[in-house]
Image 1 (cartoon, rainbow, N blue to C red):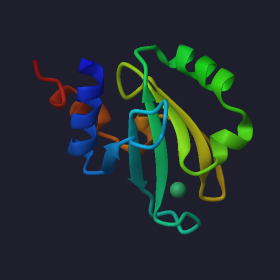
Image 2 (image 1 turned 45 degrees about the vertical axis):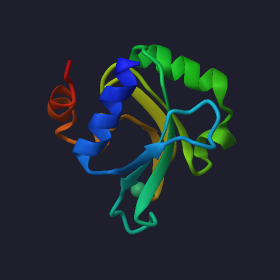
Image 3 (image 1 turned 135 degrees about the horizontal axis):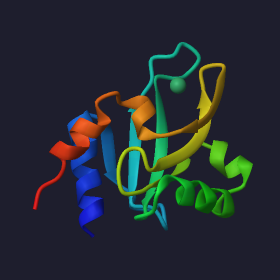
Image 4 (image 1 turned 180 degrees about the vertical axis):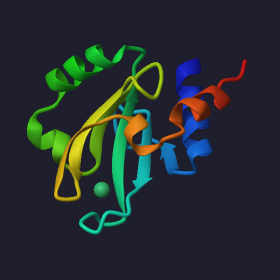
Length: 119
Ligand SMILES: [Zn+2]
């Protein structure tokens, strides 16, 4: 699937640690996001399922697939759609947490997403 390949290229471009999700049935990637917040332990870990949906559909699907304990358990289940804005997961971060997208973590995500595109 071309979209999965593009996400793999994107993870490489952002310089994060990623692997294929061997041993995590139903997921495509395991990605570690560096975090320098003092209340986090240096990073956050996501198990990612790629599905070609828009942001609103990803949120609805995430809510139907996972209960609140699953969402906040490390590694956090995440749904990644057709671009960095269409991504969704929930986790604790710092003294709070909540809903996140790739755009929140990587300011140049849309530029890197364009760079990750190749025929
Ligand atoms: Zn954090």
